[in-house]
Length: 163
Image (cartoon, rainbow, N blue to C red):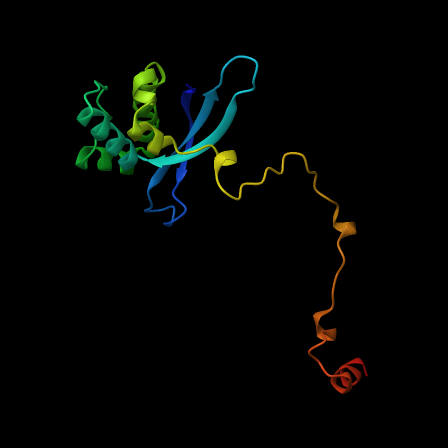
């Protein structure tokens, strides 16, 4: 069985809403530790606090003992307004404490709730292509195409445009 190690690396506003009043997502580095002799896989998943709440609820239903999550509600809302950086640091540290319990339990990691939370590594997803072996090209190698000379324009129209 493959075990994983999860670590929160940063947080950012969710891309679905404006930064001023949007949700915060936590970036979690997932390191899949594979049997010796092979490199482990690393990828990042982004999760909102609600998704941590759902994971904890599912794990509790399955009989796992997990630490409580950081405070929520009006007090957290006020703290976010008053000192957002400090409040997010508090939340990230407590979410990491929760993940540390998950990191030490192979039975939690074998659960369907955990697998759904982490998801598949990108290389396991259908249609995934790794670009790690490719390098970028310089701008000089790109060819510009003048679309005004498109084949949809008649020869007469092209002559008029060139004069």
